[in-house]
Length: 270
Image 1 (cartoon, rainbow, N blue to C red):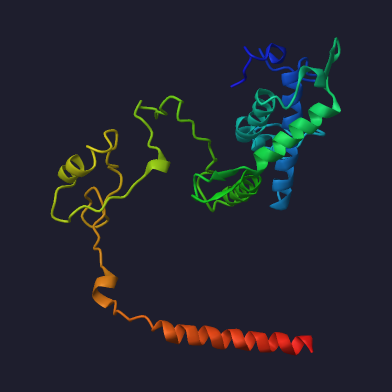
Image 2: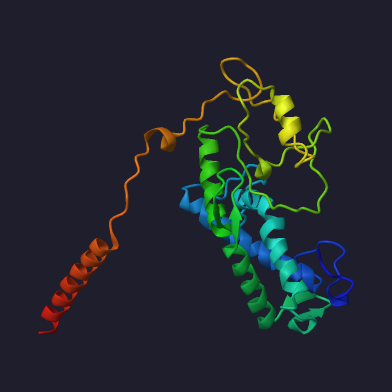
């Protein structure tokens, strides 16, 4: 959030543009332009024409598809970079020129927001769909590739990365039920002959009171909640202990390797 109480010169009440009337809107317009550029590069790299959009109408000089593509990333990348730049004091009121025609950034403000923007793009994030960490710059390219797969009907939906906010309200579905947090998913091995509900109440609930069993995860054979499987301890059944070699034998091998390396170096020095 913007520290408006501590930074009255950066008060923000509404979005305005062309031209922006205050420093916050000037920074937002600048970062949105940077975001469009990154989206253009990502779409071009996948062979897509950024001028033909899905929601925005094609218009001369406006890459409609890039504007569509950037929408989910506005708060995550552009707005976040602006908030960070202002709240950490990277920009000051003196870095802007404001008059009746609008507000313009001076070179110091442009350098500061560019630094904040690059830092934001280089931050690592765990992709919600694939589970591995990569930079936001890479995620833009991943999303462009997923968009191509969606247009080719290779996938049925386009997963978008999100940011976790532990202080936010609980997300609920259309029926008012809490949506599961995929980052907290956990698989527990329960005894085959024991009731899952009984095991859950005894072993899980006392430690994680708000945990619950996903009723949609069912076994393909019996149709019951949970998947039936068998744990085979390979080490217990197949591992054969091999005693370590004596230290004298290891030292002899190390000395032989060292002597061979020294001889090779000696040959190079001659």
